[in-house]
Image (cartoon, rainbow, N blue to C red):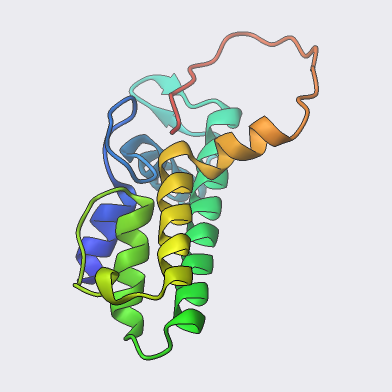
Length: 154
């Protein structure tokens, strides 16, 4: 079940209709860990350098996804304290990644918990980072640099 958690959370490739944090986001985080372990100051893969903004976006997406899923688990465990934590976590990971899998407790959840699941599904599909960008004003920066490779992150 824990392996399914991971697979649901990572999800599909970028620009697909699948949910999750996306494979590129997970790959950038893994490459960053390896790069740090090797003592490198930047991430290089296939003779390209991953841009700093891509790394920052990747970690923001990961942190926000865990925050949303964790909040969903906590709220549902408060509203439906009779349900097992593993089942609740499975429902939240599945909802965030819009997978559609269930441990069979969705129909038995209270109305408040169902709204939490709906919110987690919406945030998972749209992305919390996208919602935050829509809410906060963008600051226009005028920094000029040579081009670097930038990847699509969620």
